Length: 398
Image (cartoon, rainbow, N blue to C red; front, side, top):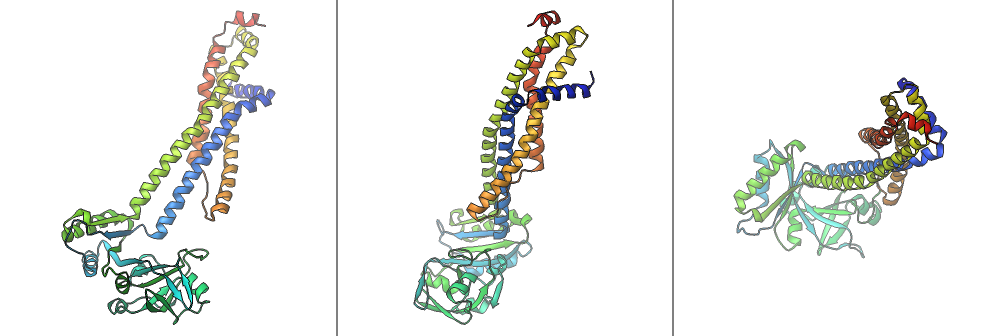
């Protein structure tokens, strides 16, 4: 019997018991669809996190000075000199002072607006664009000028879009608005990235009552130089402070790698759990094939009496099991695509964020291959049982 005839016979047997075949495939369908959705969710999470980190700057180093275990201090000029002397690797630097201060505009007080002291290169580091007005200048830092740049939400909601030249109060000081940033969020909202006020770091340090800057952001020329840049900054800080406990240097790339590894572990565990249904589906195929062998014992005896070899009987039942599993795999892939689309819509509507659940071509190919292999693996035992039947006993079977 040719392979084509074997496949035709297998399809005929599957079609003759449509409901039983579908129930046999159900475990495979559920397993494949579940694995696809979980794998697609994992890929979507990784892509979403990667895009989020890239927008925040994966070439950015965050330097925090704790002073622990060191009597020396790092001055702002030290950080600027470090970047200038290593300009082949490092690009920009900006002090960063986070303030906890209420924002007062007229008679209104705002508590959720973020107030940060930064240098003149801060907006270049994060690629923020000033839509109206001007950016900070060096003289603003040097003279501790009471000026500020605000986010688009503050401009539209607190000044009705007419903020340039207007004033606001923070920490008992009056600041004049000299610039408005372009939208950062798709929809500016209270407490979001556009609900911000930036002031010169020199005045921010004084208003924070510390008088010093203990945090900096430093950029490297490219993502490929991030490790070299981090090592360089750490070595330079150690030369000044003589204590590794006096500072920390972190990069978003390291955090991204850590989060990606965590997601991979979680997805692997979930995929393993979902894969259990594939094993259950394989057991179902074995069970049905054993029943099929019992039902077709007389047919097997007739075929062997007419000269069919054991290998022909074996291949017939193995192909039938593999075909059953493969058809279940195809249906599972289609269901997986449908469920992925539904999951994408649900996540987008619930979270308001675009996270695409989309299985990769590799995961689909693996899913289909696994479904076929399960049919072969779990169909071999019943097929072997059919192949070794004694034709005389098979013909006498009722």
